[in-house]
Image 1: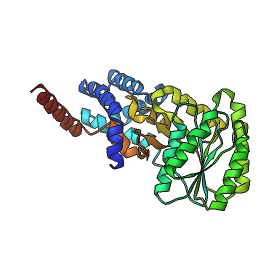
Image 2: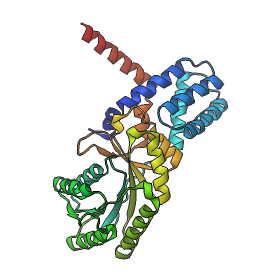
Image 3: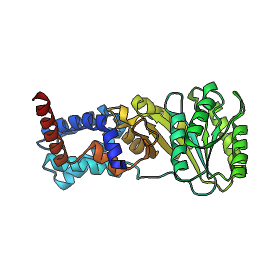
Image 4: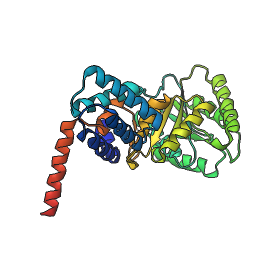
Length: 322
């Protein structure tokens, strides 16, 4: 199954909800006036785009609609997709140049951090790369145990210390082992304790110094894992973590479990942090590279596609009744 098929299937809840809201707005379309724009903004907010980002997008839609003398609902729908495309960051795949490349992964408990690391490790192993997992989240007792299970499942190596060990020391030993074993990629499971930002920043700074000293030329990614089902709380986490660590990207998990996939737009267009990976299922291969065009096509399909889907649904309903 290709990206578009996976993202379309994974975003069905979001697509159905967003299209229902937007179709109601466009169905009432007569002209681009304050009432229409207010309804459009409300529909975006209800999809978890966020108030400030929704206002920005709608203002740009209004501006372009007036310049182009937009007169039909189809044109307005295409205009909205165009504005979203222009405001969201372009696709930015993970940078794994150099050997070994380093990927730091941060995230609070329960967002799917360990699972995401395991799936990412499995992907690179399947590509023929040697992967080293570094269990540097030593604060939570079960973290290293869970990571070790994923290491075995993915076919990756792992370095771990005891509970409460210095995370920077774990990273140092992981780098040493990676050099000795010729690893291509080191994925570091780091802490994510927002309630004490000072400690988090100090911990990440120590890890950064170790990596800079031991692997001065390594490519680096610092990824934050967020749970899409938590909505605007995820946006708040991204804001706070971005202050504590210079994030290079977001892993957004459980996107298939929410009808409010506008969270992707809120992060990409609102915070200016690229969404690099999205989780659209529970399978080991369901953590996929984000694709802006496919995402927007999935949540905001062309009108003719909506009509075809409606016909298919009607036919299914009639068959079920029969």
